[in-house]
Image (cartoon, rainbow, N blue to C red; front, side, top):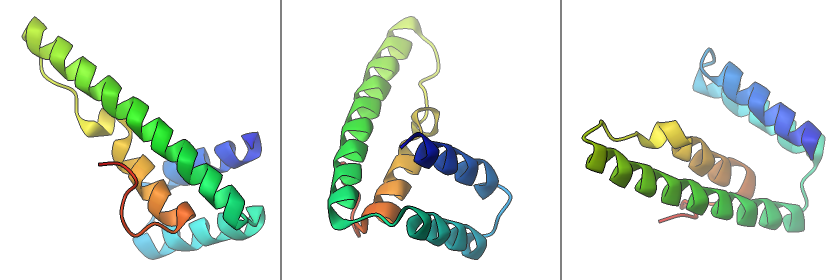
Length: 100
C-alpha cells in the first residue's frame, strides 16, 4: 500500500506538467500495475469517502475559525478535495463523486 501511495504522489506531482491524455495513460498504468480487484476498488472507495469527509469537516472548521478571526477562508484546494474526488472517479469507477 505504501508503494501505491508513492505512485499516487508521483502522479499528482507530474499531473501539473502533463496534458489530460498523458495523465490518463499514467493512471491506466498504475491501475494495471496494481491490478485492483473489485474488493480493493470498493475498499479504496470507502477509504476515499472517509478521507473526503474528514477533509470536508476540517475545511468547514477552518473556514469558521478564519471567519471569526477576520481572516481569509481556505479553499477546497488547500484540503485537496478536488484531487480526492478525481481519485474516486478514476480508481473506483465512480461516475458521481462519493461525497456530497
